[in-house]
Length: 118
Image (cartoon, rainbow, N blue to C red):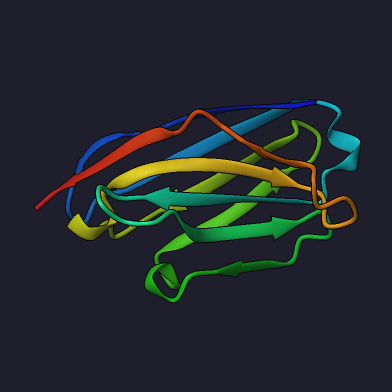
């Protein structure tokens, strides 16, 4: 089992910044991809950004140039730096950890609310 604990959400004005953190614990040796997803009211959950154990990243077109994902392997923590926030970034953000070698190993955090006021 893998446990994910998120922090850093909150209320911010449009144009502002927030940094989300996700600390992983448990059987993390099997995890090789971690990422952030978000779900706005009435919409499906969507990928925001993800990072592999080797450091490769990819992100949604809607956040490119504004959001940056990074990881601290020593702390087993993944970060999402969000700059130039827009009202449409308002959503619950979920941390995800998975193993591409064992697809059934797919874990989610409890979610953290990000609200951007216009």
